[in-house]
Amino acid sequence: MRFACLGSGSRGNAWLIDSGSVLVMLDCGFGLREISARLQRRGVTADAVSALVITHEHADHARGAAPFAARHGCSVWLTHGCLAMLEAIGEAPERVQVVDSHTPFAIGDLEIQPFPVPHDAREPVQYSFSDGNVRLGVLTDAGHVTAHMVQSLNGCHALALECNHDLDMLRQGSYPPGLKARILGRYGHLDNGAAAGLLARVDRSRLQHVVAAHLSEENNMPALARTALAEVLGCAPEEIGVADQNDGLDWRDIV
Image (tube, rainbow, N blue to C red; front, side, top):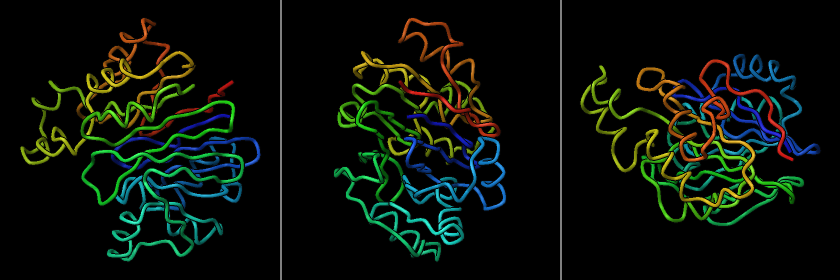
């Protein structure tokens, strides 16, 4: 199994999980032209995508889901709450599969486990993906760490963890007070230290890859995120991957 990121941040998010026989896109927060260009950079055609899996309805995660699914004939997997919010704004995909936030489901030979997270959306979830041999956990939008999140990410072979902001940079930065309060709140986004705390709590015995994700372009720096996660692992910061807004992350194999 392998994974890649097409872009991660407040301007758009999309990940690819490839089992060899099925290719799933996690979130689709870019328009059709942009997502096609980003797929091409990863050596993938849009028609090769088997299905979309959506974490929540915020535009940077779901704005492209309906048009992409309509053009390329794939289904969109999402929670009932997420679907209801997309319906309310007229952006619901036509071919949907509603998932329960605690119940695993399969797309081809990929088993996908959703788990609920605290975030300011209707029914937000994050996911882990397994081909029966290895498992990838992705967590990109959560306001604080819960015991269930830790349990859901235990024993993964690869982890992508939200490192949205550095606390000092955000507090001293130019964002208006209301936006700062939202990000810092219990339904906002994880800072570098919170992500490191989560990493310290999970079972890391099988871990091969750790990737910092959803970094704020104004309130964080890759070096800060890398250092926070590397301290937990006792490794060099350069061993931590970063999925950024413009370039995403190139393919990584999980063996």
